[in-house]
Length: 70
Image 1 (cartoon, rainbow, N blue to C red):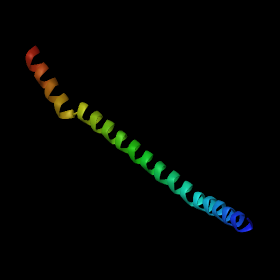
Image 2: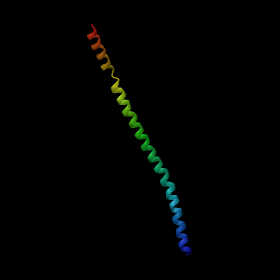
Image 3: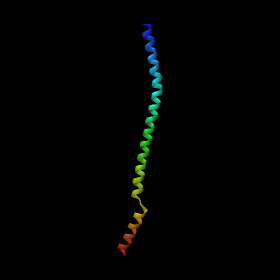
Image 4: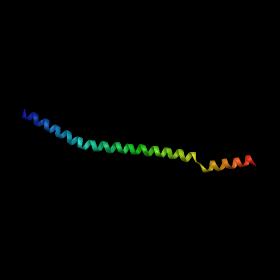
């Protein structure tokens, strides 16, 4: 019976040691994935904004409107 209890205690200790390593690694990986995902979303939004405001298109539209009015 004592051997069984000793094995049970050792497995419990091993479990906590393993969890002590696994939990921080999982948190670090999940936060890195979250940061990467947010950066990609920001890049997409930035690309959309840059495409919607193109000075060349605005200048040509203004020149076309001036030609129509004259």
